[in-house]
Length: 632
Image (cartoon, rainbow, N blue to C red; front, side):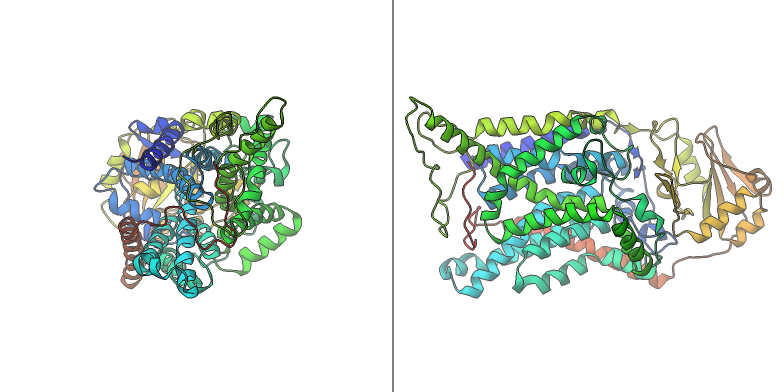
């Protein structure tokens, strides 16, 4: 193995180590059940999973993917595998981005990977259960690399420079870049928000000539949730109360802007590590921003790509901060009421993820900044001979730097290498957020469902939607821990489960899109006869006995239904002759299924094609408007 190969293996292994330190408890058997994260032994390809049911398609194509694969691979393993791969990809992608964009050494790449993995955004989204959003987060550095690769190939072809190289590698570079961008857009598109994140990065960096084809490619990778929005209920306006409920939150001693700049500020004050409620939040944010500030100048100097990422990072922090002001809240409320699908924007802190690529580059570049400063200080010390090394003088403006290895490089005797700076930065980035380790302080741990759930699944053998009591979207089971969790019934049962979508957040009651579900819930709580439920399309009623919540006078309703199964945890009732309401037509299912198949083909095809067409530039950026310095 060559030295560069060993360096890459070291970085990959380091990212794997950090990933396992974060999700270690999930390595055991069981299922992830924490707030919005719900993994089950098996999911079913219901109308809701395809995005054409009564509920808004917020988890498209994620739910369909799990429904298709879980009969072959246990759903718990699938969910944990996607999360682990996403986290590793985020770290390694940040390292590769630093190597390609600022010629970062191995130590600097480790710093970039650490920042991408060990930050409040990752911690808070894990605690909120947004594991699939982290797949979109992980795709961001890879999207930046692919888009820059396409722009390099197209701009060189347009200018006619490098004709000999273009004959050998130009078409391959362009094809490989498009394949990588396809895979990145599709991987990020596991959720609609992830798709939007990747689009911002990719379209900003891809260049003028490739912009329109890139937009078309992105739209195609969005096929599952775009068709679901058109065919299902996703085009309905959202409750404006959700804008205030999901606005970015100020963390202690930081304010809203400081929290967002430090990659924190999630709306749910309970989904934060304990360290973010102490002065460590302020200390960690100051350290993070200090490291980033040390590298801003070098990242800006690399030209268009660096500047674009820095601007995106600034906007991704400023806009959510403005969105939490009274004027911003008013603008957000207008959007979600008048613009279809604008409900995707109400959780503004999600979009702080866009700052990660720029932050990672700045952290890598900061290693050189600090190292050069230390050399100058030592050189100015009495009795210290000047010993200019190969990396001391900056290259001439407009001239590309010499091809740099990914190791720390040779240096003159007495010079300081970048390794101490890298070690220091890794220590400073991780220590204030030490409770991210081991499942964010043990909050993420696998759970085991009672055997009664499988019995309920086996007994649901007839059509009709499922109504669930107690009322509400969230549960607190004895086996799920102290944090509230989304009801697993919609993902574990073979029939569609009616959900109101109503959330209670920070004192706000946010209505969902489930109008029929609210009517059914009200009928159950009022003790309406089962015939009324049947007219509303309900064929089954599931009682979850071990979670608190209102059940009202539902015993009157259940007295007129047929008990099919019960144990100490669950009870299942059959409602005879249910009407078929809000059922997707065969044409809608075919269209949605075709959109999902197209997305899957783009994901797999893009990954395979990108793997077969590696980037041959190996970090050279021949078309930089201003060639950047090597970060040693």
